[in-house]
Image 1 (cartoon, rainbow, N blue to C red):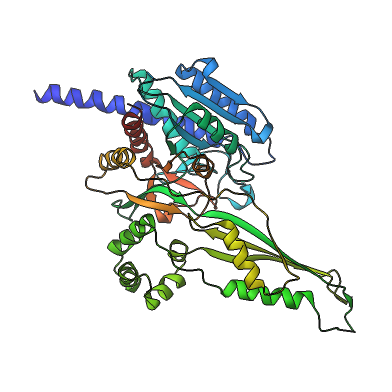
Image 2: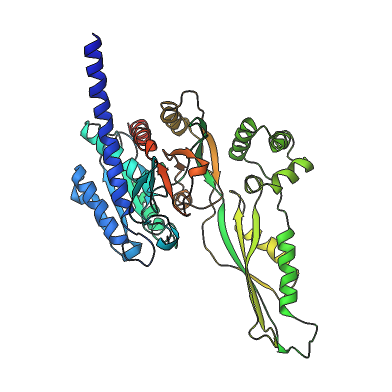
Length: 452
């Protein structure tokens, strides 16, 4: 019996290892495409992924590549029985720039060292793109037939212009997609000993909005000041905006996030978080959370001056001054209301306040039993008893375009890692090699549970 049990374990282990090996190979090949805006490899990577999908057995008619250079996009459909309405899994193919001279290794050659895999995009977003595709390939080989169509959308410019996800969201709407699983958000954190600290299920994100404030004047020679200097006036407006604190507003999602932080923290801030949860008007707690970069974005809308341009010569009074203010707006807050606040804070009728970006403002996605149950099962298969926590991102993902179409979207990454290893967008981006196998299984569970 012991011999048979050992043989069964060996067979089981080898079967489980195959998808992990496939996932690593796919990830390493993916890193090799420098899908940075302007490098011209976006289309090549989309064509590569199209080939992978066809090799999995997807029908050519179900794999659509819209070729447009670095703004290429890819759409595939895994046909199900049609018993339920379709769902979608979304990823982005592009990555942020990486200067080889600054990196220890070539950023566009996946390199394994010290139990880690290095490369640009190895975490954001090619890790979960590769894990989810490998999970689909393994489920298809096993004969799993989804009870609904599963749409796969791969955008090409999430890190820059965000032009490719918007039409994909319209396609999803037209196809009747009722739920989106986003590979580019959510995920888990480990401590230095590899123990789980938590898992975030992303169900909301703050609205990204840039505003330009401009002021013009007659200028003149600097030796003959008039007392009307556009730099001085716009600088005063910038100071008022920078000092403004928008009202505190806690949603069920941010309350859940803060409660999880309070549970994990043993420092003074943990106590202040508990105080704020008990009383949203607690001034001391508000001040403490506002002073902490990790919590200030959770409790209120924020607007910060980021770029100031003015003047044309050192010996001339400026004729024009402009200021960029970047806002991260809480879900449910009207962008025009924020613009009105900035106009009021500018305090000068001659200062124009205009939006630069046109990102849609979207509500939080509902935390339904279907999505929470599926994520809980995937997470607890790895870490028994670990309860996923609702999460709101301060930054924008492609989910915003799907939520704008009324399609709930959830960030459900399968990556668990230490915060010390989190270098997405940064120097020497890496992921633990040990994270690959469980991430594939995470996606297998999620897909089985949501697509059955």
